[in-house]
Length: 238
Length: 226
Image (cartoon, chains in turn cyan, green):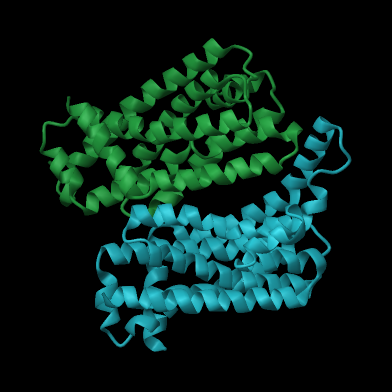
């Protein structure tokens, strides 16, 4: 555990040097301010422009969902970029043969990031949420969002072999959140096509306060993490 | 010709690292979204899509491209070859512009836009601006996180005013060059010739800055100033 903590501290030092640490603290707050105040303002503008009563307001739960997902996604994206740099510099192979080990390395980069992003996500959603979703649901979504953030980071580092591929995969992983649209915009059984994505179940959970959907989302995300972690550890071994 | 070979080399690089695959995937997603949006939204939605993604891809990817070239010692090889910095900048700009224009052609066609030539021209010019901005930022960084930090304010400056201008086209804001780009894409330009001229002036200035920045980067490769 000491090795994991030490490795995590080293990552924090690195982020501090790049000023990324400040960015990590401020961006969720800026985004939250935007979501809380600018989106209702845009709603006012576009309802006036199109002459309709409500355009975005029926989707405020969806907006909250995006806000909650944003913080862990960003934290884990930064961690993924650090892993990509270390992979390019062959640092991971060296770290893997220290007492830290491969699992310890993964825990220091993504596990610890997840532990921090969970309360941060709850904090941001508590401050800036727009919908009437209750605290328990928002906390549950924050947990599911945190686990999904780890999946996105794992996808980036597992499926890419260098920085450029990492950025490309990073762009593709944005599709991982496409599931949130399904319960709102795809009617009938067609929406189940996206049920392989935890984001689909998160969206269903917040849409109809369905705690079972929330549980499915977390379990499904856990399954993704198990599969991807194994693949990543195997990749480090090569 | 050397420049053609550089462009082809960059296209090959972008193909190898999946840029074309990604944009086929994202084009399909955008087309799907365009179909599910109400028809009244379609023109505005496609303008935002074209401006914020295919046109802006250079700003997103350039940091990783330059860092990978640094770590693979490609830049070291180029620095001692007869290739000039301006040729390197042109090759990057043209190769990424090609993807931007192809994707915007698909989106404009699907959305049924009537001003396709204007959209393609605006996308090409905007893509050049974003690629040059990305390149200028990328010459000054050592890590991807540094690049993300450096480009974040650029993104705010480049995306927010055109997004506002699309819905609130105030007279004063039309003088911001990137608003001209958004106006050309969304077929709402009050004076297309003026907007194109403004974009060209910005491109020329950015080309000069990018060339100098690339020269400086090449001279300091390997940690030693040449």
